[in-house]
Image 1 (cartoon, helix red, strand yellow):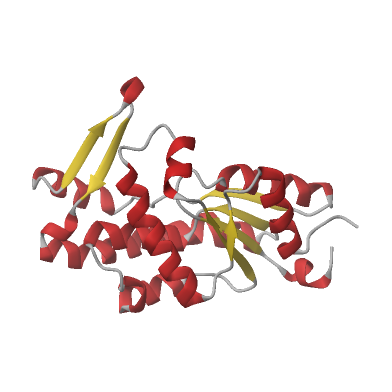
Image 2 (cartoon, rainbow, N blue to C red; image 1 turned 135 degrees about the vertical axis):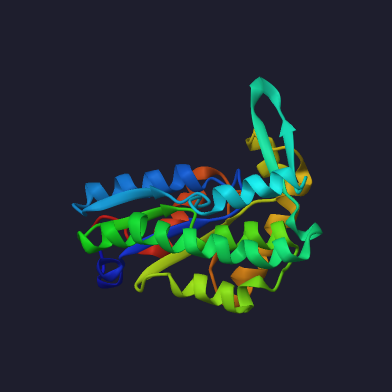
Length: 221
C-alpha cells in the first residue's frame, strides 16, 4: 500500500444497475483484507425511514407505477414530477433519511477505524431523485448541496459506466431500458461536474478491476 491509499478512509463505487458495482466492491474488500486492512463492506441503497409514509401517500395519489416482472418480482417507478408540491418536498424527506443512513452506515464504521468499501452512495440517491422529480439540476440546489456535504473526507469515488443495453442484459429485475437511460445520463452529468473518475465497465471484468486497483493504488506490495 502506498501512502495515498493508507490515508483513504472510504472507497465508493457508483453507477447504474448492471455496471458491476457489487462484484468489484466485494473483490476490493477481499484485497484490502489480504493486505491486513480493517475494512467493512456497505451496500448503500436508497434510505427509507421518514420516506415510508410519504411514499404511501404518493402511492394513493397514483404517483408510483408498479411493474410486475418475472418470478413475482416487482419494480416501482416514482413519477413525483407530475405533482409540483410532492416534487419539492420529496428531496427534503430523502435528505433526512440520508443523514441518518450516512451516520449509521458510514460514519459509525469510520469512527471505529474501518476503511469502508461502499456499493452505491449519496450520488446514487441524487441520481434517483433527479429522475423521480424530473430535475437534472438538483445536485446544484440547496438540498442537493446539503446531501453532498454529508460525504466524509478522504474518500475515493469511481463511476462504473456501462452502456444501457449491456447493463440491461446483465440485470433481470429491471422494468425497461428507459429506466437505465435516464439514470446513466444523470450519472454522467454529476461525474463531469464533480470531477468523478469514470471507469469503462463494459470491458472484461479482470481489465476493469485492474484499472480500479491501478487508480486506487492499493495493490499489495
